Length: 100
Image (tube, rainbow, N blue to C red; front, side, top):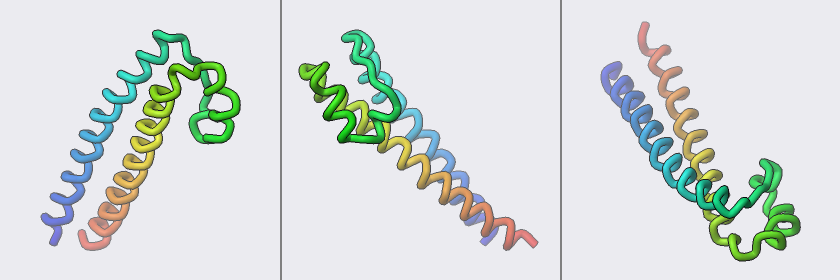
């Protein structure tokens, strides 16, 4: 049981690392394109779609698809990292409980 839990935790850690690298590459690719076209917006716009539609899309209508791709990749990356961290913490707690 102990070896199985350690293997699961190591697998989840590797998965989190892979997801982080993969989405970081996708986010950075889109981010470079937005920087090249001088698109600027803040964190409040990323997490509030209505604010994004009201304030940013009218300023950069030709970059709407890239902005949405960037925001969606960023949100998905955050969501996946949160889930994987929660799973690693949960399995770590179970591992500590069964260690004795």
